[in-house]
Image 1 (cartoon, rainbow, N blue to C red):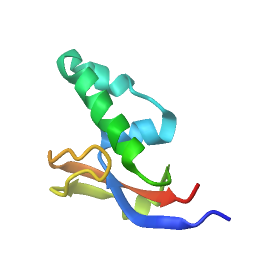
Image 2: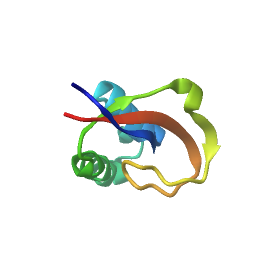
Image 3: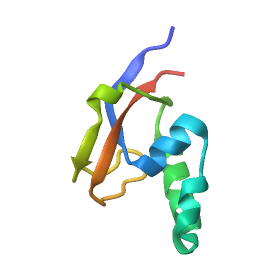
Image 4: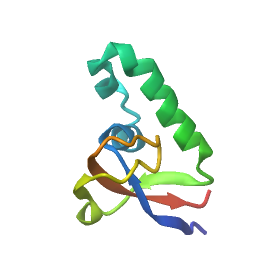
Length: 87
């Protein structure tokens, strides 16, 4: 049985693209930070005890100063609802 471990996991758009599609191509917009951002996202996902999946888009925030629950980015911007599921 799969249980929801965290129903309030809010992530930035960079993390959302990786969680949803395994897509890191958006990070290539700034090659000088691409490797660091990839590491931050992967480290964030590795630290979660469970499986992160896209959640309810109705719970997304168009603008938030809350840090990303995945990569820890403190940059303000959109935050997208995800859930952490048991594995």
